[in-house]
Length: 321
Ligand code: PMV
Image (cartoon, rainbow, N blue to C red; front, top):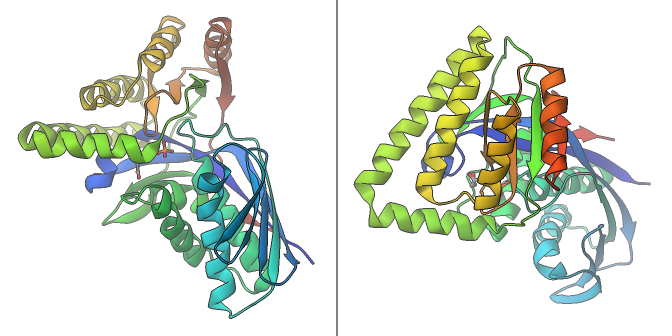
């Protein structure tokens, strides 16, 4: 008997960082996934194996199997699996195997997707999985990694599609009247979301008025983006992505390599481009007018020596079974 689940990566089109302080964000899940299978194992032991880190937990002891910084990467997953066991007073062990085609540590939501899929796989092994509870469990576990998580990543990975999200207002599906040919460029520079969120908090505390102004501009951009999506005005979306990047530059969370990739994408004909996620390197997204343009943009980024790939919006989110 195995529990199986898969959950998608995500991009943030508008509103990262500002979403932590209650602003809206527009996100989409994309067609890159993490798949998890879980089966019962030796009593009291939880073994987690993934491509980047593997280890075995027994009570408070951790035995490294493989990977650098494995404990940090695996702790939230263990916490989530243990919660599911404890909620059912189950003493059984677990063997969890994770396979991913999401680049990790670059803002594409791999840790949220891993949590969502792991909880779903364990829940489906032990009982009846419930998407809302899985999402809540993933957010709780994510807060071990960065305690101020807005929850946006877990929501979009669980429920899928193009969404409007805010901490107070939750999730609303967004209907786009236009296809969004999107390209991801990867600087390859791994970031630490918690540290970047803390750096923004410091900036906010030191410059309350300036930050309030940036929040208001970011909100405005997000609202205009909703209108542009609703009317299919893809050119305007590109303009808004560029404006959004200027605000992220003001927060100091972008990176010169990300800025370089944004320039490459724009010179290659992107309608707009910006970093996505926490920043500090990580990935950028570029919006193209057509499939032909997105192919060219991806190939121009690759020609500069960086990974790039075209993505589509995944309308499904978490798949269980
Ligand atoms: O880079 P990621 O995938 O960890 O995205 C973080 C998004 C932030 O807005 C910076 C933080 C959050 O909790 O929403």
